[in-house]
Image (cartoon, rainbow, N blue to C red; front, top):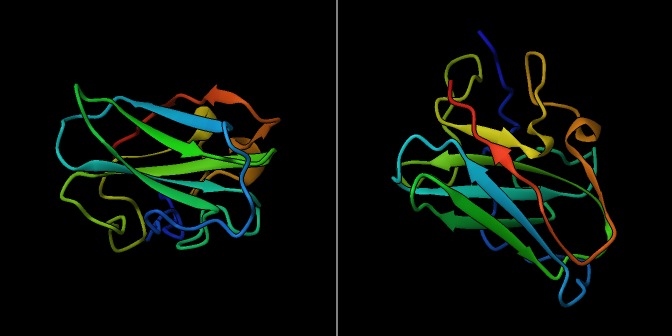
Length: 146
């Protein structure tokens, strides 16, 4: 059984305001595939450090994406250049926190940028991170269900 510690996205702050000034036109889009249905939405967190990834409420930015045709796209606008990783989950029932079992294993779909995986917990920040120089980019993620 694969356990994913639930510092993993327990509470993505929705529409979290960034403390850093973003640059207009710099957009990171996260195309999420593999959703098992069109229920609810996908909640994504953009993290900018290993110290915060993927800790609850510590994302640099958080967004909610609607689902259509079992796909969703989380869009982060005005992102300054830097190194970032994404953590996400399928909030099938509109949850704002990821549901987990007794030992912290997820009870709903989840994913990370670079489709990174961890061993008995979430992946390391460096395994999921991209270096972002600005502009428009897309990072695909295939969701995993327990």
